[in-house]
Length: 254
Ligand code: FBP
Image (cartoon, rainbow, N blue to C red):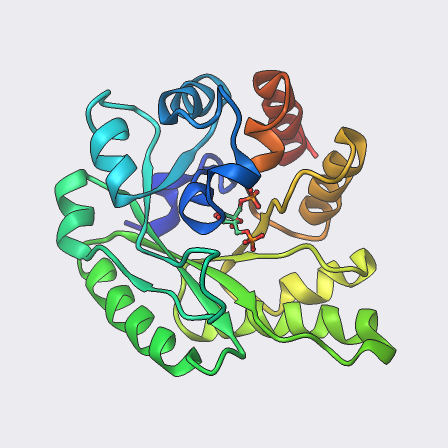
């Protein structure tokens, strides 16, 4: 395989539907009568032009696998609930699970700056090696877990996002999933620092208007980004397919 990310991308670009929030945040904050149901999400993934869908093992085996979805699976391997305070997220599945499911990629969150950082770095590296042995794409959710001093929040924040992108690249991820910075004019610098690794945008909660959100995706792609991994902004929207098609145009046509 020339480019390992080809199996979850189209023309070098990635549009991922993320659905691990039930684990990370719990039903109360994120779900309604429609989007609590994994089949609703898989309908969106299948009809909205997504190049991959990310789920934890339980949902992947009970829903994605059973309906034989054609949208490539990103098995999200680690996770933590919002009930604890510690920034530690360890794997709850392994490479054999990814192989048994037929996942094309694995996803792993690293909380950089957490006091448990070293544990996650070690576990990630082992999973990266096993994934690459089986030609499975490795995606690192690179999430800094430190708050910059308040006096120059914005100035430092984009450097921390760049640091996260850089660390993911140096760790050997094929794709880094990074947050949108407070200073969008620094996006190019951030994405450049992913040196040789594709950078995709992490959606965030649904606080922006539709226009603001689409502008973020556009800025990210214009700055050299390789796509987006979006969850709540899509499946909390009243018309997810229409919004997906707008995002699709931005990702592939600019
Ligand atoms: P969203 O677009 O809903 O933010 O999904 C992307 C994602 O990375 C999910 O995979 C993950 O559950 C969530 O964000 C984590 O969000 P937060 O950092 O706000 O807990």
